[in-house]
Image: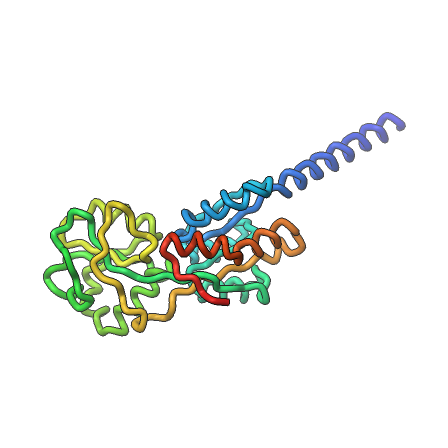
Length: 257
């Protein structure tokens, strides 16, 4: 009887210690659900933060729509969500995933038309997308990737969507588009955020901001992480001048509070 009691006590103690160790390990770790276009820049932000804070970061980098759906369905767990547009953050608010009164919009971006660096195209006007100069147009998937949604808005607003939709091919995220575009044949262009340009691409045209809603990133902590002081501290740091300087240096628009 006593032996059985001791055995049960030891099992309970082991479970408690395992749980406590897990929570201790988790305390020094933050998971960020990040719109693809912010991942590289936020890696720099994380490195700066770690210089004074013993913490590890896990990045979940996907299109904003896939992140929001993953968080809502439980397939993804995170402490902070960064969306490339308001729509997917509104979705997260509606589903009760984030803390509504802490949603902020610290950064913006610009859409550009680009081509492979060795493309014969040197300049391109917006209306030229419907001409014989362009055979294929790569854009983000408008159903999940905000840069694709902004692109579709701009094409529709200028009356080009119906004229060019047969030329359009979509990509799930901005990195995939940039990689595809870099090795595409002549006559292919891509429309992406300015910050997504790589050394293998050349900008041909800057899309008029009046053709689409302003590109505004949305940031918020997850409700599941409410009360975590490390989440609160890093979220505050994201709005510091040091972070604004990093984003501005990487080509983002910094939005005044």
